[in-house]
Image 1 (cartoon, rainbow, N blue to C red):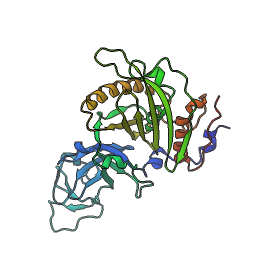
Image 2: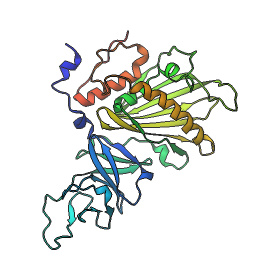
Image 3: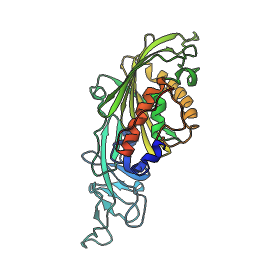
Image 4: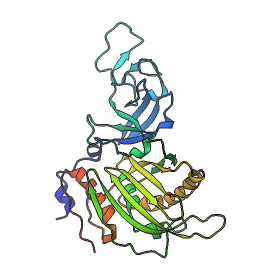
Length: 341
């Protein structure tokens, strides 16, 4: 009997399993004075700024289903553009202009959700209580490093598939030919994966090809890569090359649904590296486009709930350990890794 059939009775739905976690839904700079639409795990959201932070509610008015993102933010809350019904941060209606002085019905409310602003992102948790805190990246809050973000990545693939390809060390020399992949280095040296509370860590050395500058051919650049995973869908990847700029990449895949995600992807670097942002955006978009073509071609698009139908080798250890952890979040129990070939 396959592991999947053993789990069928205990596996939670995708939405139930991942609603209790924080997910980014927008860059901070996108949310200005007007409400902003967003989507998470099939839930349509309205994001808006308050006097003390950010708020997230369901997007459509309880009165006649109007889009609250077409409304405006007032001192009382989020005001619908259709009839002026106004909602507080807890989602309850606080004003119905057409009948002032009359008690507001208890049903006049929209669902509200936990919302927070950190690391230049707006985060939302759909559950009553978060199952885990936001990732801890204190280096982003010291003011000593600069950051540069890519445009949001909208891929037709599950959030877990996106994270797996970020963690996959064996594809570098194949998929990333022409960017940083070194086609002469196909063997992956043995590496260890450390399990941590709420995540994973691994370190490898890879002879990447440094970007070709001023017409010169690319040079082999021995790079130390440190992978850190924060369940369910966040990864921090630190690059320490010998020729190019040291930097850290943050990739957080936010699930729209089980088969579609948007990824918030940015890098931190020393602010003295004035040309880094332009180089990073150009090169990283090319690298990620190579990844997207592979990831969107994988089947199933949904993140697999087992390891059947695939043959694995020891070099796959990091993405397999990651999948093992995500499966455990769906099933609530331990999951054994497959035996590598």
